Length: 214
Ligand SMILES: Nc1ncnc2c1ncn2[C@@H]1O[C@H](COP(=O)(O)OP(=O)(O)OP(=O)(O)O)[C@@H](O)[C@H]1O
Ligand SMILES: [Mg+2]
Image 1 (cartoon, rainbow, N blue to C red):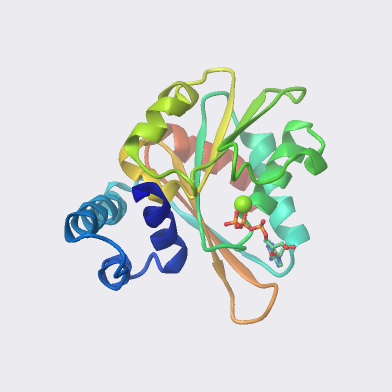
Image 2: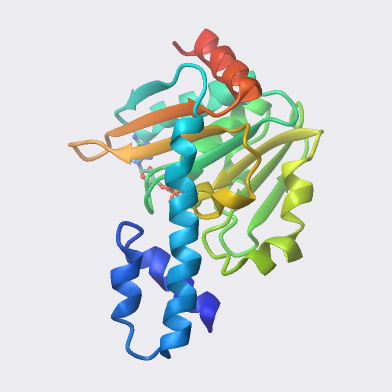
């Protein structure tokens, strides 16, 4: 019940979840407070991460999905085992499209990569290293993260970890990660893809990506 409403909130508007939950009349006051606390905590954590940014950041324009795939391909080629890529961006922004490119860069068939929205995690073997593709959009609570073995994935040393909707679980993420945000541009099909490393390992990853795709 709580999980379903948290999910609904995320869907409705990440920009103003507190107002949204106040207007869900079917919920008891205590439930509303719990959801507001839960969501505010996640959002505050996301905001607080910004000052921790290290190294240069970079933005690439993308005019069509093939360009997003090409950037993903560079990320897949540049990645080292244990790297963590945390993706943010609205529904349909192009997160999975980017992961398809990442898969291609790792030597996987991009057609095998789809949003693991219901399974939360998809493990892809057969490339130059494992690809752990997570989509935490439908996670309702911190308990769900534990049930999933989220921490084990984050510390996997044999592959690249890519998390869609990572901004919803910032508190559970390691500090050193490459945050990539995909935002819609002014015209249909246009995206702005911004990468920000939050530690030395992710800063090196960004440098290797820039060697491939300046
Ligand atoms: N420049 C672009 N980059 C990426 N995708 C684009 C671009 N232009 C158009 N698209 C289209 O936008 C859609 C992006 O869908 P995708 O599943 O990758 O988004 P998502 O961010 O993973 O969504 P969700 O939050 O539902 O998982 C695709 O249909 C893709 O073809
Ligand atoms: Mg997706």
